[in-house]
Length: 340
Image (spheres, rainbow, N blue to C red):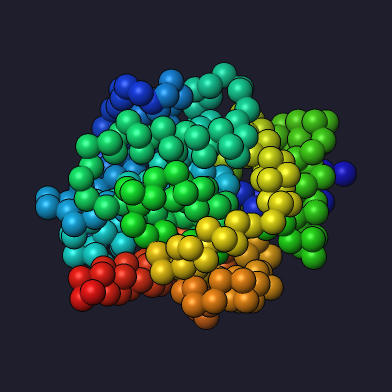
C-alpha cells in the first residue's frame, strides 16, 4: 500500500540554545560536488537551547546586514549549499549568510527519536536569534523556503525591531485542498501505522550500500539533481528518525495552515515582505498568489518562469536563478531605504 506514494512523498521531502557548542568543518567540493565560488560555506554543529542543529554560514568582513535562511521540510541545510554560496557572492560580500536546519532532520539521531512540531521548530529558530545573533548589530534579512516562509513570517512578528526584510520563496502558507500529493502526505502523516511503515521503508533504502542508494535516488526523484542534493538526501533523509520528524512536522503544518493566514500583518509589512511563486507548484499555487495580491495590495509578488520547480535548490541552475532573484530584491530594498 505504501509503495504507491513513495516517489511522490520523497518529492515532498525535496521541497520544499542558550549556550553554543559547535564544531567546524569546511564543505569541500570533493564530497559535495559544489561549483567553484569565491567563498565556501562552512558547517557547524550547534547546540540551540539543548537541541543539536546543523548550521551553514558564510561570514562577511564588514557586513551591512545578515541573511538568515530558514529551510522547508525537510529542513536539511545541505540541500541549499549552492544557493547560499551563490547568494553570498551576488551580494558582493555585503552580508553574512546563515542557514539553520530543523531539529532532528539530520543524519544522526541526536534527539533519540523525539518528534518536533512546526511550533517547536519555529521556537527553535527564535531561540537561535535570541542567543546566537543577539550581538549582531546589523539588520536581519529573513529568507524562507516553503514552510520556511511561514516560519520566517512568524519570526518577523516576534523580532520586528531586528528583522528589516522577509523574502518568501515558493511559500507554503495555506493547505491546498486541490493537491493530491498533499492529501496523500496528510493521510500518511496523520496515521501512526502508515507513518511508521513509510519511515521503515525509507530507512531500509538508507541501509543499502551508499552507491546503490545514490543510483536509486538519481533514477527516481533525483534525475536532474546536482551531486550535493543527491548526497543530502542519501545522508540525511534516508533515516528512520528523520522521516518520522518530517512527517510529524508535516502533520502539524497541515493542522496550523488550515487556519486563515495573518493578512493584517502582511498588509502592515507589505513594504518589507516579498514573495516568489512557481508556475506549477502545489505547495504555493498561483491561487495563493492571487489571494495575496487581493488581500495585500501593493505586495511585492513575482512568478518564476524558469521551470525550476519547488525544489529549486536541487539543481545548480535553479539555485543560481533564485539567488539572483533574491539578491536583486535585497539590493532594491536597501537602495530604496537609503534613498528615502
